[in-house]
Amino acid sequence: MKVFPRWARVLGIDAVIKGIDIGIHAPADDYRRAVTFIKNDPLSLGALVTTHKLDLLNAARDIFDSLDPYAELLSEISSISKQGDKLWGHAKDPITSGLSLEAFLPVDWWIKHPEAYALIIGAGGSSLATTIYLMDKAKHGKNRPAKIVVTNRSKPRLEHMQKIHAGLESGVPVEYHFCPTFEENDAVLVQMPEYTLVINATGLGKDVPGSPLTDAAVFPPNGLAWEFNYRGDLKFMHQALAQKIRRNLMVEDGWIYFVHGWSQVIAEVFHLELTPELVNELSDAASNLRPV
Image 1 (spheres, one colour):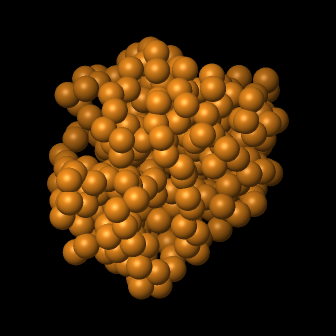
Image 2: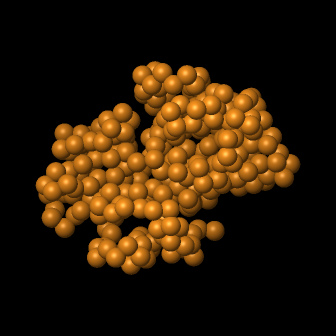
Image 3: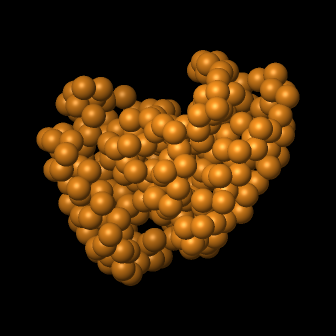
């Protein structure tokens, strides 16, 4: 809410941002009312969907006039925009997660470390989007993980992810682990080979305090730890930082993901073209508001 006015000045946008606060896994009618309001209100140009990407589309799919290919594939939306009098839903996470990962992942990481995995804790929309990016053979060639491992505390999201992966035929093997407790996540983590990328794709540390791991968790040596969150207590990130020297870890928070995620949506809503230089300018404009 503090960043948008700065970005509006950078982009020359005459607009304000207003929030609609909906509880996690809210009743379908709550999502439908919000989407209907955006569609019918002439002053509402669109929206960023933060933590309800699957639930909102599931509840309000019929209100949209069109969905982009990623939204159709993932059954989620992270952005709402208007094309004339038509309401569009977009799934930006495969794009934004990829841009964010490319910002800190060393070049040819999995070519140089062909034994390395990617472990993603959480099976929500951002997690699924990241797996699709990692699997993309046309984009990455051989620079892909030897295996992708996903854990989640409930089975339906894992089953949904598995169904989508089956249709992709990417050639990258995937393991799905039902882990209702933090200790079970620890047990999967300790099996990861060195150089593995470990991602906290849960809301723990942002939406609610905590981490999907216990303090006894051990990160793979020479690996990377990516905290998707950029605000909150960021406990997962601090757990990784505590092992950074001992395990030789690279640790990244979710700030760049935040910048790409919001800027991609703003570009869609206001029909703007983003350049790398403009993204850097937006990041700089907000840098002193970055949570410590």
